[in-house]
Image (tube, rainbow, N blue to C red; front, side, top):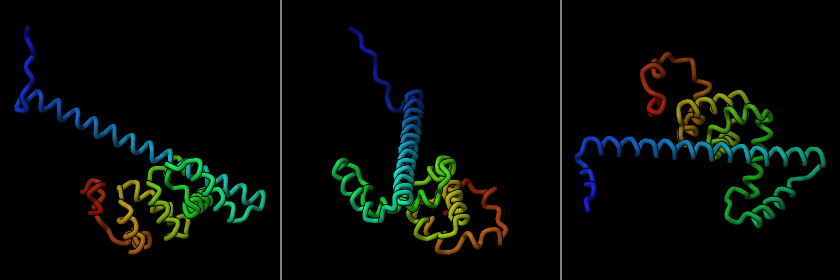
Length: 175
């Protein structure tokens, strides 16, 4: 009986294959995370839109959010993000972005925590949208986004000439 030898880690072909497979796995995991985030943002926007619509059309008050949160958490105990506070953010998110196209194409690219920070810190819709685009383009973490907001990057942008965009790749440009 003959057996096929297992390639040693020093084998160039094996090392190349391993590196390629690891890269494909990392890329697939990233695509999966982005898809999950997108669906979560769209779900949160839809929940917020439904709450906003019902409150407007039927005169429901803020107490309905507490009741919805309790009922949803009872029915989905394993799911986080269904607190009254988060449902209020969902409502504010839907109110801030009434156009589903904007949510699908731009806002869904950022994690939920980024949107909560933006809703709290930036009241002007144009400025908020500018920060969304910048955070998506440059891959800002929530802490970097918070810092950019606190230091007034929106108001400062365009005043200083730089060559950062041409010389540094986007993920490193904010370091």
